[in-house]
Amino acid sequence: MWLLAFLVWFLSWAGGMYWYLCGRPSPFSEDCVRPAGPMELNQKKRDKLLKQGFAKQKVPKDLDAIVIGSGVGGMTAAATIAKTGKKVLVLEQHDQAGGCCHTFIDKGFEFDVGLHYVGQLHENSLFKIIFDQITEGQLEFAELDQHFDTVVIGTGKETREYTICSGKTEMEEHLKKQFPDDTEAIEEFFKIMKLSARKTPYLAALKLIPEWLALFLVRSGLANLYSSAFRLLSMNATDLVDKLTSNKDLQVIFAYYFYGTPPRDSSSLINALMLHHFKRGAYYPKGGASEIPYHITKVIQKYGGNVLVRAPVSRILVDSQGAAYGVAVKKGKEEIEVRAPVVISNCGIFNTFKRLLPPEIQVKPEIQNRVEMMKPGRGSLLIFCGFDGTEEELGISSTNLWLFKNNDMDAMMDEFFSLGKDEAPDNIPMMMCTFPSAKDPTSKFRHPGKSSMIILTMVNYEWFEEWKDTTVKRRGDDYMEYKMRFANNLFDWACVHYPKFRERLVFQEVATPLTNNHYLGAYRGAMYSAEQNLKRYHVDVMAKNRCDTPVKNLFISGQDVFSCGIAGALHGGLLCAATALGQIVHVDLLLLKKKLKRRKAREMAALAQKKLQ
Ligand SMILES: Cc1cc2nc3c(=O)[nH]c(=O)nc-3n(C[C@H](O)[C@H](O)[C@H](O)COP(=O)(O)OP(=O)(O)OC[C@H]3O[C@@H](n4cnc5c(N)ncnc54)[C@H](O)[C@@H]3O)c2cc1C
Image (cartoon, rainbow, N blue to C red; front, side):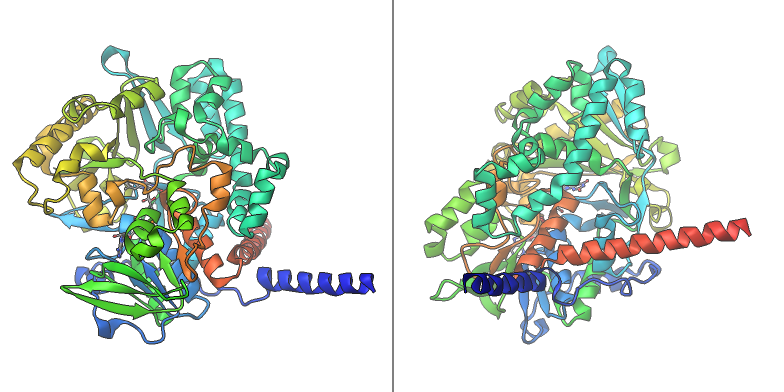
C-alpha cells in the first residue's frame, strides 16, 4: 500500500518535473533565424520603430504582459515571452527605446551610452544563440582587434603598459610573456576563470528552483560542498589575488574591469568571469548599440506586442489581494492605466520597490528585506568627444585604453571615493577610453571623416546631488563648471596617449550621474543600478534575490537579478521570462545549442570531404 502510494507520488512528481522542464513548446527554434538583412540607414524609419510615443490607442488589446523599461534585460524578457505566442507591451520613460543600449547622434557624431564591448559571442556560444533568437538573426557583431584592451598603470616615467589579447589559448600565453615571473599565478587564475564560467549556471539555477530549496542548499553547506564556485562567489577578489601573486601590476590585470567596487569588496568569481567574458573575443554591434532594441522590437511586434516610449510608469497597480494587475503611465497631467496579468519591472529594484509600488506595500517587511539586500551603486561620468578626422589620422583603433594612476586598486579607489566634492575632480585615479567609430565598421560610411571617443570614469552621486532638482540642459553655470573640471582633467590625461586629439576636437559633451538619472531612469544616477559588491554576491543573497517578488504577478528583470553588463542583464531577462512563464527556457536553449553544434560538425565534415575529393 505504502509502496503504491510512493509510486503514484513519484510518477506525478516526475511527470510534473518533465512538464516543467521540457513539456511545453520551446520559444526558440533553428528556423526563426534568417541571414541578416541590410542595415536600415533611413533615420526616419529607424525612429518610427525606436521612438514610437505612448498613446492609449497604440496599446495592443488583451495584453499578456507589460514590461517597464526597454533595456536589454526587459527586451529579452519581452521577446522570449512574445515568442511563446504572447502579446507583450514594453513601456519606456525616455524618448527612445534601448535603455543602456540606446545611442544618440549630435552634430553628426554617434555615441553609445552603455555598451562599449561585449564578449562570448563566438559561434554557437549561448549568448550568441540568445541574441540570434530574440532578433531572429538580424543582429550582427564586429570583432574588435585581437589586442582589444591596453592597460596602462602609473604616470610619467613610472608608466607601465600591458596589452590584453583574446584567444582561447592566446590570452593566457600573451599575459605570461608580459609577466614571465608569474606564469603559475596566471595559470591558476585562468583555471579559476574556467571553473567560474562552467559553474555559473548553478548560481542561476538557485534563482529558478523554489526559494526554500535554494536556501536549504546554501545554508546547509551542500551548495559549497557541491561546487567551489559558491565559495569563490563570496570570497573577496583581493584575498584571492594576494594568494596568487605579490606582483601588484598583475593584480591590477586580474581586476581592471572596474565596476565601482574596489577588489576588496568585489567577488572573486565575478572578477574572474569578467576577464573570461572576453577570452574568445571582444565584440561591438555592427551599426551601434541601438541595433539591439531595433531588432528585438520587430520580434515583439511580430507577436502582436509593442514598444512605446515617452511612457514613464508612475505606479504599479496592485489589487486588494496584493496582486499586480497593471501599471499607470504618466501622460502630461493625466495617468493612463494599462492592464495585464503579468507585470515585469526592468527599471531596477530601487525604482520598483521604493517608487512604483503603492506606499502601503513598500513598507511591508518582505519588500524592505528585498531592498535592504542591496544598495545603489556608484555613478559614472562620461565624456563624449567628436573629432574631425579618420581613425588613421587620429591614430586610434578599436582597442580600448584603461588608465590607472597606480597599482594599488583598493587604496586608490577607497581614497578617491572618500574625497570631498571639491577635491574629487583633480584626483581621478582611473579612466577608460573607447572609440565607437573605430569599433563599428559601418561608421566609415555612415559618418565619413569623423571619429568618436568616449572617456569613462566612476564618481559619487553625492558630488552632484545639489543639482538633482534642476532641469536637464539647464542646470546652471556652477554645475557646468564643476563637471568640466572632471572633463578637462580626463581629456588632458587622454591627450598624453593620443597627442592629436586636442587640435582635432570639435564636439564635447559631459554626462554625470544626473544625466544617467534623466535618460536612463537610473536610481541615484548609478551606472549599474545596484552596487556590485560582495554583499550582493553573497550566496544567500543570490538565492533570495530572484525574479519573483512578494507581490503576486510582479517580476523583476535585468541587471539587478544576476549581474550587471549586457550579458548579465540579458540573463536577468531570460531568468525573468522563465519565472513568469513557469517554464525553464534554459533547457530549450541548451537543446538548441546542442542541435546547432551538431549541425556545425556536419557542415565541417562535409567541407572536409569536399576538399578531399
Ligand atoms: C556608461 C556605461 C557603460 C557600460 N559599458 C558596458 C560595456 O561595455 N559592456 C557591457 O557588457 N555592459 C556595459 N554597461 C552595463 C550595461 O549597459 C548594463 O548593465 C545593462 O545594459 C543594463 O540593462 P538593463 O536592461 O538591466 O537596464 P537598463 O538598460 O538601464 O534599462 C532600464 C530602462 O528602464 C527605463 N525606466 C526607468 N524607470 C522607468 C519608468 N518609471 N517607466 C518606464 N521606463 C523606466 C529606463 O529609462 C531604461 O531604459 C555599461 C553601462 C553604462 C551605464
